[in-house]
Image: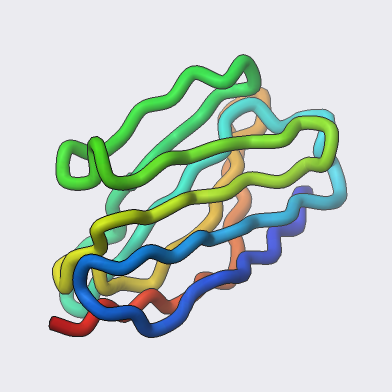
Length: 116
């Protein structure tokens, strides 16, 4: 199992920036992909960004050009730099790792609120 701890959420005005961080511990050698998901009230959890062990990334269309996912394999950390935030980005953001074999582990979530 992999334990994940997120940090960096908060309240920001539209147009502002936030940086989320995720620290992994435990069975880190089995980590393949790392990702950020988010869930807004009344909506399904959605993939925001994903990065593999080689650094290749993919983003949801709604955040392309505004968000950047990064990963430090040596420190077992991941970050999400969020710029030009919009009210529709308001959600609980979850760190997720996908281990070799497909099993997923989740963080506890961190709230991001963007005011208009």
